[in-house]
Structures are given as C-alpha cells and as structure tokens.
Image 1 (tube, rainbow, N blue to C red):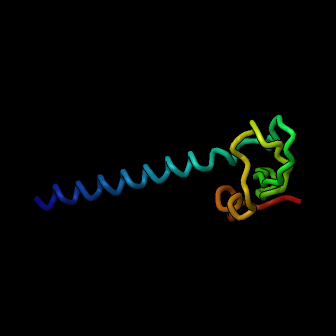
Image 2 (cartoon, rainbow, N blue to C red):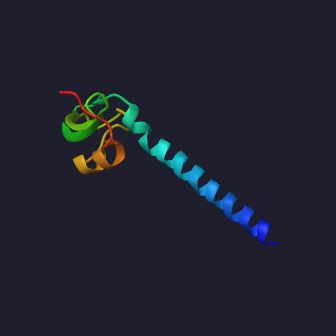
Image 3 (cartoon, one colour):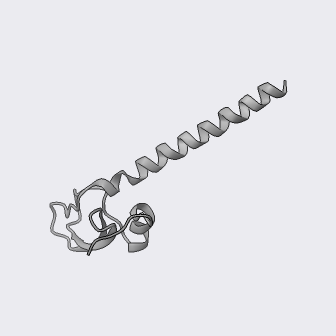
Amino acid sequence: CAANMKSLVCLVCLLLISLSLVCNAAHNKACTLKKDPGNCEDASTKWYYDSKTNSCKLFVYGGCDGNDNRFDTEAKCKTACVHPHKTTSG
C-alpha cells in the first residue's frame, strides 16, 4: 500500500511539473515574436520584448492586428520575457 501511495505522489509531481513547463512555454511564446505595430493608425505606446538585447523596449502600436509581443507596461513585458541569466550586448 505504501508503494502505491509513493507511486501516486511521484505521478502527481511529474504531472504538475509537466503542466508548469507547458504553461510557461505557451506564456512566453509571445517573447519569440518580432515587434509588430499592426495595421491601424491609433498611436498607443506599448512595450515589446527584443530578444537580441534581452530587454523590453517602447514602440507605437497602431491599435489593431499585430501580435502578442505587445505589453501595456514595461513590468509586464519583463515578467513575461526577460531572462536574468542572459547577457546583453550593447
């Protein structure tokens, strides 16, 4: 009985780790996209992640279309995309 419980606990742990990795990958997919200002003419200031510099930068978003590499604040961009272990080149 103890062996079955141990196996169940291990299985649950593996499932949770797998789920965490899948969610993290889906969440950060936006960070792999290039900046896309969209096709409309509304001039909103947004943030995008620049993978070459591992930093978040401002850009003007047109208000429609574009892609998911678009954040309302620098903090949201950094939380989603910036990797502290990467080095940046100037």
